[in-house]
Each structure stands twice: as structure tokens, then as C-alpha cells.
Length: 295
Image 1 (cartoon, one colour):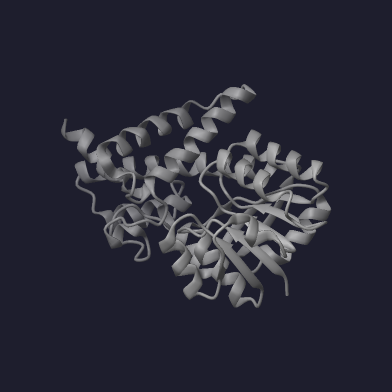
Image 2 (spheres, rainbow, N blue to C red; image 1 turned 60 degrees about the vertical axis):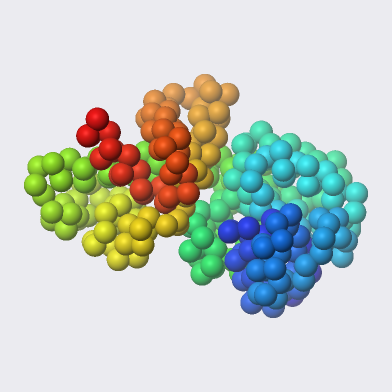
């Protein structure tokens, strides 16, 4: 079993660290928020009060942080302290350039590194069913995979440095667009007198089928486990979807890709957040579409 430092014990990082403890690893954690530290401590994570203290004896360092600037800052802080050959894994969702910069920091320190953003939301983090999209050298990925398997069910090597982040933002752009499309279908169906169940029964078994419909249906009833049946509590918050759509648009601009639907999805989620719904599950965008129909 490994000695692991886990920095960032929030809604995703906390349950992920707890699953590493369940798998028998020794986990030392740090977070700026006291409530997050206490929750992780209750799950068996040893808590320290500085990131540098968490990594001193670690064989593996995992970060789960809000943005690229936080990852780069923490990696810069801990690099002088970590031991030789310590594996650096970042599970945050950040921009591709920051991810590549982090890999560069690790390379200068002669440390193996992997960018490994996740998909699956808080439910996946709790149940250890996350998908990890990984970027980095083959040897670093091979070393990271057994650790990631304690927190997820599908581990994919997407390519070199930053490839995991690239896959994540492409995937979530597809997800954001498809959720809006599904919500538009249901709001149109409502106007035309279709029941939610009737539309679901047709679309889920025909050409309209997609994950946003069959697993995360945005109306109560057809899929009992979807957030729609729990007052749209996340899940995956609309603010996080907006973050990923913004990252996708930044990447599209820098790479010269054309993503008009991704841009439109970003503007719709931005308006939803400005209405005060950033903490609502992203499938709650159906409320915004209904509101727009009344104006």
C-alpha cells in the first residue's frame, strides 16, 4: 500500500481520499477549509495544516483544486519538499496550458506526472465509480493507474501531457450541449401536450437517445436516480458545467477550432448562473428554458 498526500478535500477530493483509505492506503490530507478537513478526518485521512507537511513522506501526491492557478501554486510550493521519484497526479479540471505547465514543473524536478481529471460527479467520487482521463508519459500512467482504480471504474490514457484535460473539456462540452438539447425536447413536448414518460419512452429507445436523457433525465419520474427527483440538487452543479464550457471555449480559440454550439451552451449556462442558480444541478437548465418561454 502507498503513502499518499491528498491536497484538496472538497466535495470531490474528500470522498476520493476516503476511498483511498478504504483501499488500505495511508492518506495524509490538506485543505484550506476546516469543514473539509474535519470531514476527511472522520473518514480516516490524517490531517495536516500545510500542503508541504502533507507531501514530506509521500510516494504519491494527488491534487484536486479549483483552477489552474491553484494547481501551479501548490505544485510550486511542494516540489522542493517531495522525495525523489514521487508521482505527481492532478485530478483537477483546469485549462490545458496550465496542465502542460504543471507537467513542465514536474519534469524540471525530475518527477513523473499525470493529469487525470474526472467525470462522474460527487456520486462517482463517493462510490468510487469515476472515469479518469489521463495525460502523461506511459510509465507515469502505469504507476498512477492502480491508485486511480481505487477511486474509479474506468481509467483511460488519452496521450501526452495535458491530453487528459483536453479529453475532459471536449467530453463536457458535448455533455453541456446534449443536456440543453434534451431539455429543449422536454419543454417542447410539454407545450405539445406530451407526458414526460411518453417522450422518454420514445426518445430513450430511438435516435434521440443519449446519456443526458437515459441516465440524467432532466424531469422527475422516468429515471429515479437523476437529480430531477431530488429537487435538482447536484450532482454536477451548473457553475461547474459553466466552468468547463468556458475552458472548452478558451481551448477552441487558442487552437483555432470552431465550436458554435459549445459557445451557445456557454452563454445559456452563464445566464442561468447569473439568475442565481450556479448551485443547482446542471440538468436544472430546463427551468431557464421554461422561464425564457414565458418572457
